[in-house]
Amino acid sequence: MPNIKSSKKDVIRSKVAYEKNKADKSAMKTVLKKFDAALESGDKAVAETAYKAAVVSVDKAVQKGILHKNTAARKKSSMTLRLNKLA
Image 1: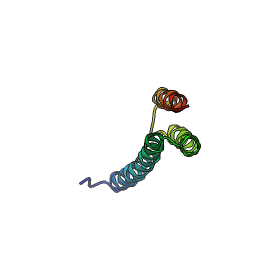
Image 2 (image 1 turned 90 degrees about the vertical axis):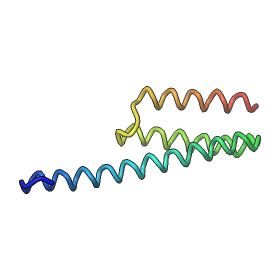
Image 3 (image 1 turned 90 degrees about the horizontal axis):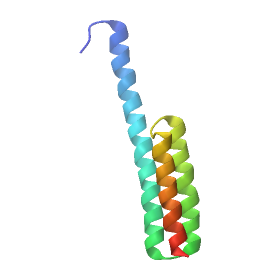
Image 4 (image 1 turned 120 degrees about the vertical axis):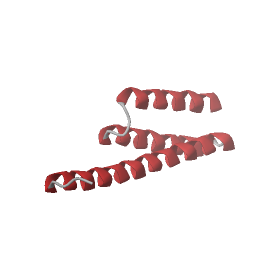
């Protein structure tokens, strides 16, 4: 544990940011799993709504700095291909 006051604050800020990022990443993963489940069910309409929610979630993760933009593009591309195969 640091002795300097500003360093103590840095540790607290870092922990708060870590917890927030962890929660945001977990929420994104949940949305992606819901999309996967919608694909497994085979219902095109449900899959399309889940796809839209997943894309929004991935884009928000990029804005928050949780995902790299290329990782997000790869995820969205993969989801699009899987959705199109369902048709």
